[in-house]
Length: 181
Ligand SMILES: [Zn+2]
Image (cartoon, rainbow, N blue to C red; front, side, top):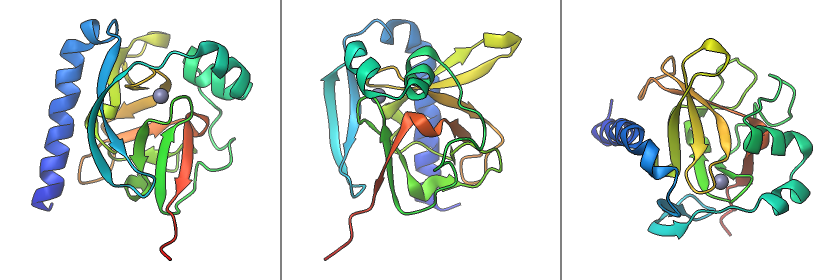
């Protein structure tokens, strides 16, 4: 593993644990600090922003499935939504609030029928929450800016992190990498 990748992975893990211990206080807060990222994948710096809460707009703008997944913790059926297996360069934003979530460079084919990534674009842009639904203990992944449910993270992913961010296609908006002119 390269040193930079290792450090990034390490910072992600630290953020996971930090986020967990602060989860109770974080969820009630009105602001959150995230990394802003341009459409061509450049980190623009951290910004502390008001949490996005636009339920009426989401009900109108999102498809019924995207609303159900993101706002009601639903799950799309595996292999059912076109785009789960996309591998073009670009980045993935939150379908609700446009927060940058994943770089296509960290996407891989997990064979599950859901888009899978081994690392978020910035650890602070997602939040991990223990999920005890259906009698299983899993780690839910939410958008840090608007609390959208995105999917779950598991520890059976590939190197360098060993993590599998198993996301819902409908929770993500793909932005293809602008062509250089
Ligand atoms: Zn969001």
